[in-house]
Each structure stands twice: as structure tokens, then as C-alpha cells.
Amino acid sequence: MIARIVVMAALLASAMGVRAEEEDKPLGPGEWPLTVEATVTDLAKRMPEPARKQLAAMSREDLAGTHFGIGLYIRNHYGLWRGNQSLLKSACDGSTCHPDDASGKIVEALWQRLQAEHQPVSTTGR
Image (cartoon, rainbow, N blue to C red):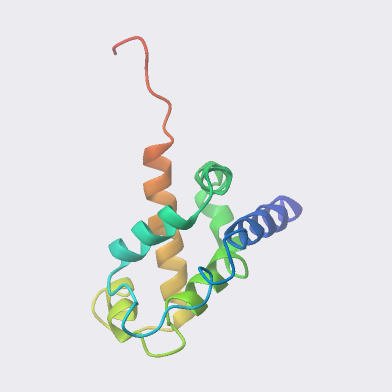
């Protein structure tokens, strides 16, 4: 189980790094998304489809294994360590929380969106 989590986190981290270097530089204060929803939308656009499917296939319990993969990317890229107070408050129900906690909530929100997008469609009409 732990090995599976580590492998999934490594795959997600490497998938996020496939973008061109200039696209992957951390955003500056004027570019930061200010809400979890905007951050999830941006992440979903940046993620290659294989990474989207991998994250969607994870269980809720396995999301903790993304802390040093996509979680680290979120903390660095979206300014959680550099003063993006609006995003911290959005992630933590209106109060400022630790960037680790905020990135975990953003990963969970992204996972929920990807779960919804990758649900099998019923062909039976039921």
C-alpha cells in the first residue's frame, strides 16, 4: 500500500514537470489564483491527461501520499509560502492555515473534480 502511494506521488510529480520550464516557474503575486476553485481549474489545465487519470483513480486515503508531489508543486507554484493569503483563506474556510493544510485541501478539491470528470458513463440509460 505505501509503495503504491509513493509510486503514485512520484508519477504525479513527474507528470507536473513535463511542461516547458518557463511555464513551470512559480507564479508571481499578480498571477496567483485567489480561490481553491480557480487553483483547481488552473491545475486541471496544466496536468497532462495521464496524470489526471492517475489522480482520479486514487482513493481518498491515498491523497496523503501526494504531499511531496503535487502538494509541493501547489505550495511553491501558487505562492502558499510567499503570501497568497487569499488562497490560504479560501482553502481553510475563511481563516489562514498552514500551507501544508491548504495544499492538501486543494489536492482533495482537484481529486473530487477529476473523479467527477472520469466517472464511467452508463450506456444502459439507467
